[in-house]
Amino acid sequence: MEGIEEMRIRREVIVAVILGAFITQIDSAQQIGARNPASDWPTYNRDLAGTRYSPLTQINTGNISTLVQAARVRAAVG
Image (tube, rainbow, N blue to C red; front, side, top):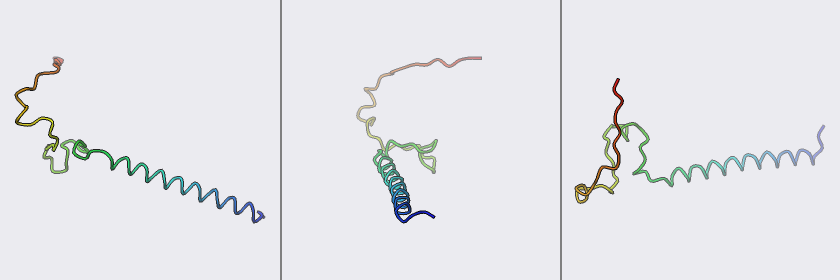
């Protein structure tokens, strides 16, 4: 049989492991929540309704005429 001291140490180790896992889980949830939800596209069409609407404001009706082509890629034929 284990002594009382060994049982206490084992219990403290188990509590420490559970606490560490819990703190890691909280930290991960905070990092996920810190993302900008406006720039997040969790599904193919951004939302379950398939609206493809983006609330981002970098491109708008005031600056659309100043945009220039940044790259061009030719599609492979065949």
